[in-house]
Length: 270
Image 1: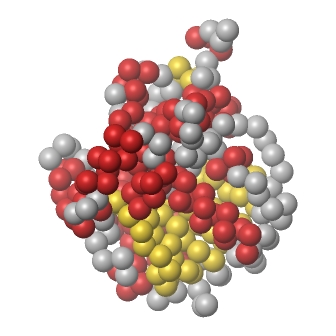
Image 2 (image 1 turned 180 degrees about the vertical axis):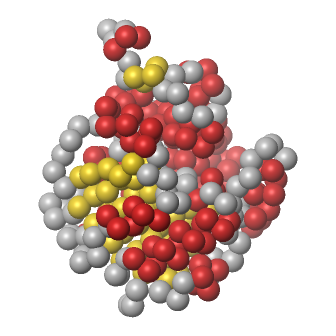
């Protein structure tokens, strides 16, 4: 049995601390009889962490939002790599996500995970080393890390649960910088609506948002919208009937349905 002495202490606050929630949601899903994502790494990593279990478990009721988001991004990633087996994947704000390990990657794929130095330090103690995989310790708003992104191959950029924790100007600058650095590829991310960002301010959060799905095209001419779907568009995958029914009722209203969306952009020419 693992003791407290053997476990990794987690001392992350603010947006950094939210990585525990997503990890816990994936662990719950993995341990369920009918998993949606089936992340077998999540329970193993969670069991190695010394954290406030009560605080994390209090948010378990929203787990399907995060699970469906991750599932759709996994699907987009798998589709892109099947068509571009020699690509680089750049995952921004990776947290403790296991996408680089849980997916069956083509042997030619290079994978880069980026997050704050303290998150990468924790991550390096939890995940094993592997070929064609590396981590960059940096704030995503620091433009210097872009120099480490290769430009001689297709690039898929993933930003899951990240952009909302930036400022609106930082989101715009990040997408413009990526469009200028990536030679050709795709950009996949989630974002919340302006009205939901406004509501969040009442609870002390200042979250970034994207209203018009084509707005990033006006920021950077090398970005072309390919797909925009509500995070809950795959709610039929939810195994619990009461949650599936509740989300189904909520998403009948377009305002609620589009409160959280997933975006996929092409970078560069067609």
